[in-house]
Image (cartoon, rainbow, N blue to C red; front, side, top):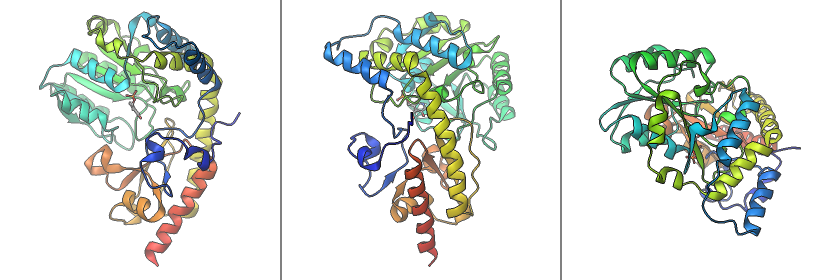
Length: 374
Ligand SMILES: Cc1ncc(COP(=O)(O)O)c(C=O)c1O
């Protein structure tokens, strides 16, 4: 089984953002979609649902139970399905959790560079964002303590981190939990990228003595199911009442097809995600070699998590690296500035594609720089 073996011709027939947003000669390596076919058990479950016109509302806790089975297999964690409710998607879960544990004007900590909807969610709900930047791609625990001590009420944790791909260690997360308990802060952990990681990933709710906490997660990233909207929001003991007090429309926004697809993925596509992770790791190693060859000024050390590479392009001396690569190399990445205004010299690269596409992109990047100096 090879997960990332789709040709550009096949991929260009798709109509999702990745394949329609930019000009047809541009290799899209931006949005977090994977260049793969969905796992066969997921396709079969969806085909069956279409054939049976099973197009109503979800009712059974199939998604919660499938996640609990997956969590036991992947991380050895006994998640209790009755402590999870379904949501429309992961960012919706983050928002409802934030609204349940804070009020307008409350301070909320987050860690730039960060997946842009984190900042937007804090701002659009009338909360006040407190930035504690990542330090060399790791959590700045001293900075987090200062922000908690300064009156923060909640902390939006991205675990693993997007864009950096950092998998926070158990020690780091235990320290976060200790600080959150001490300063009475609710931790809301986005674990959507976690399915790619095995033992090295620690589910936040699995920590002993965790205080007020929520986790928002789904199968959307791990199995490339963003089109099939569904998410899960879980709570610790101390936040269970808040979870149960959420309005019914939170769960009523979950798509039945989403539940069918995500549950099939968690139940029946475990080998698939393990294989995807192997190929992603190989792609990261390939990207290291290709950068050495084609852009030797850059240094890139792959992180453990996600299929993303967060690349500091400052050594290239370009005004706007992301725009240069789009316009000159015809390769489109996410611009670093989307993840925080200070990160204009970075690009976020999506490596969930075939080695051939990565080779072609690296070749184009190298040639675009050669022509820029000639
Ligand atoms: C960290 C993170 N959270 C949430 C999402 C979006 O998930 P959803 O579409 O379920 O809201 C993404 C998508 O890339 C992500 O990277």
